[in-house]
Length: 65
Image: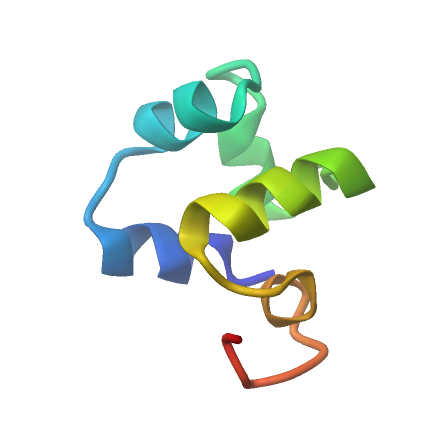
């Protein structure tokens, strides 16, 4: 997944992303490290937050939109 890349490009902390999408602050870093996978609802929230498609987040395409 491209979560860390997207977060760094946006210039925000893991805590800020977690708060914005409504997940536990301890959970979001696990998404970035691949320890835990977000469910479809959380993937949609992440896509909306980063203004990209779910397919881009999960590396199914290189097109952000």
